[in-house]
Image 1 (tube, one colour):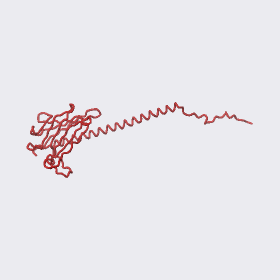
Image 2: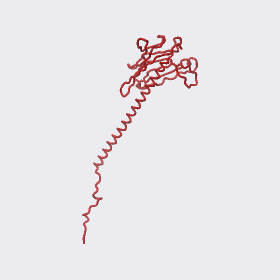
Image 3: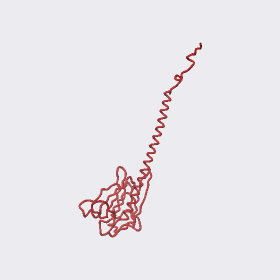
Image 4: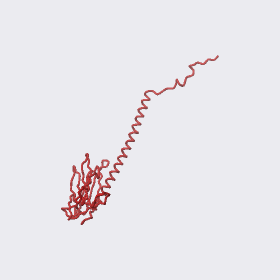
Length: 219
């Protein structure tokens, strides 16, 4: 009669070894490091996309503002006999940076407003401080209807361009560039106007200029 010892055959369940506490801790640490790296890369990409989007928006805003200034200056209206038609440039600064004041009357397209419109507006551009940074504001008023109607048609100043470093307006009188102009004193529009705007982009200063020739007189 053959007998088999019960100790000669090992059970697979008995020999199966689990993870030690040290191995689990190492796996958790590695998982945390990988997760942190992935999250860091993800948010870095998001920040880069956000900066790129902000830069594109700032450039679009800058381009549209300079184009608007070019068109309004080219259409500026002046008549020595009519004090409502004018162009004034004042040389100002904010903490040493150019902050010119520009006021001019210019032709404007008809809007969809119900009130009467003359088609000539007085526009004011001014640099102002807001929340520790500068903004370029724009205000407009109908040059003729304001005096003829009881209602005020002057609009509130609104931000035309935000986070601007400097705003410089220069006038060419035929021989030199000057930073001030007043049609009441000069008796004419300048030959040419140059507007220079500085903005900060990724810690660098971006400067762009636009030239425009006032062409309308004798209204």
